[in-house]
Amino acid sequence: MRMSKLFVQTLREFPSDAEVISHKLLARAGYIRKLTSGVYNFLPLMWRVLKKVENIVREEMDAAGAQELLMPFVQPQELWEESGRWNAYGKELMRLKDRHDRVMCLGPTHEEVITSIARDGLKSYKQLPVNLYQIQSKFRDEVRPRYGLLRGREFIMKDAYSFHTTQECLNKEYENMAQAYTKIFNRCGLETKMVQSDSGAIGGSVSHEFMVITDGDAGENDVFYCNSCDYSANSNHAISKLPPVNTVGKWGKSEIIDTPDTHSIEELCEFLHIEPTIILKSLLYIADKKPVLAIIRADKNVEETKLMNAVGATDIRIASPAEIDEVMQLSGFDAERGFIGPNGLKDVKIIGDETIKDLKNFVVGINQKDKHMVGANFGSDVQMPEIVSDIRLVEAGELCPICGKPLFVTKGIEVGNIFQLGTKYSKPMNAVYTDVDGKTKPYIMGCYGIGITRTAAAAVEAHNDENGIKWPIAIAPYHAIVIPVSVQSEEQMTIAEDIYKKLLAAGIEAVIDDRDERAGVKFKDADLIGFPFRITVGKTITDGVVEFKNRQTGVMENLTPDMAIEKIVSEVNNVIK
Ligand code: ATP
Ligand code: MG
Image (tube, rainbow, N blue to C red; front, side, top):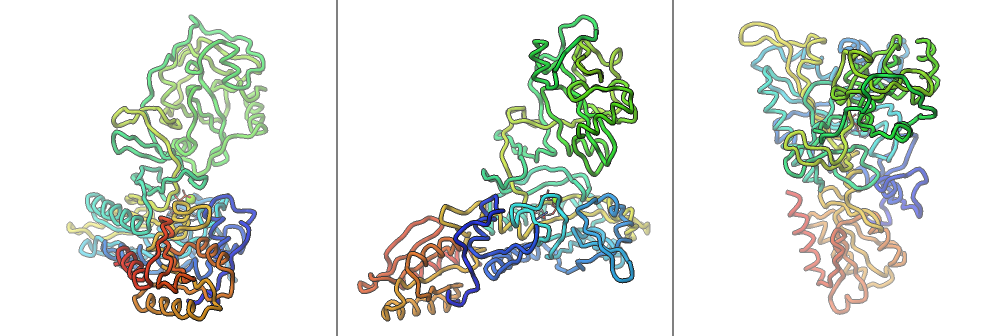
């Protein structure tokens, strides 16, 4: 490819809406252009990168025994009614009508479609197990599309689905996919951590996410991990042991006392000269439009996904002051934030965290402004809620649930995940096969996703410097660029063209920068776009040497043209089989 012909327009500035480095660099280096919120054009350079990621995914999925197919992007409502997700999926599902008023949606994921395919074709145990996958654009009307390709509305995903007769068989495939994923991300130049996670809208019980660990802002997930054993989990799923603390208050009997203006736990602690470990904190949430009160020991915080799962809801958020007022009025109280408590609330589901079990003689809000009860106990003063489960947000320094050593926390970008679905889709959709014993049974299923576009963006997050992108060789749009310093110099041009041709002949994806630009401009563009290797043909060519630069290491060397070519060929062949 000739730089003069390459369809790329680099920008002087980062786009104003770009918050994270991958978005900034991909936009500035001419890889992507935004069409509308969360929807991007993948320009030629980007498309080359994406095809490379796709092909790595394809090769490893095929090698792992999966078969590729392609399902429709538009899906009918009825199928989603069958699984029960038409209502459950919420606003991320982009719904539309055709000219006959038939309701459809844009595929955010394909469990329903694949289950209907299996139901039609996989009738006997003899045909199982099967793993089917596709690579396709998905659409999710995300609440907050942001970070460029990391969280788009339209994005490319590899989604695979497996069908089994037994849990053991699913376990085996789950492990097989975990291994394939590790290979895929390694080949893409990414180190990943496989962490336990919540199953979310997809459903199922066991699931893991593959996280690219990052110290940038782009890591939307908190990952808790142990250095002494291999425990690691997304914060939405992490559990921990707590070091012992005092959970018994100093009061001998319960009484209601004045606690003026104590709207926060800190203010209450200061006023009563106590630690938060003897306070019962009450937080009002709205889960699927209904009020839910979460109660927890006050030195700890609620993890919203855990709370949502405990309630069995699909959507959750903290209540607004107006919603708190409404709940108070309905129950005949007038308290505001800071004074809420579990007693006497009408039509409010109460969920307790495990930490409340140890509380004795504690402090609790009683829905009266400027008052609290002290010396309270479950049973006599406050009813123990029917549901008590772990809804606590883990914090760094708490203890590993497996080995008891302190946990650490880091940020991660989720590039892929694997789920054990069990019969979550096959049962309601009546997707069954006939087993050896002649009985019909629902398939036991697994599903496995990889964000193709997100993986490419995560690679930029992991590999960049102040000058631009440092693509891993395997997914770089081109391997090398040849830069003649002066296109006016016949000697430089002849040698540059010769090197360029030899690179192409050796199977290297090369670009020659034949533009009549200053050398500085060409170098800047080469670094910004992120070619892994650069050969510069300048004045030193009279001594028979060119300058060779490795973008990843930054090392520059003077080599003969043939040595430089050989170096690139061997480096590229090392990575690409
Ligand atoms: P997240 O928690 O980040 O929203 P998810 O759990 O909804 O992800 P899945 O439904 O399992 O993700 O999708 C599989 C993969 O698709 C994810 O691991 C991720 O790499 C990618 N992905 C999901 N949502 C997006 C998005 N909005 N933009 C880009 N890639 C995405
Ligand atoms: Mg999501």
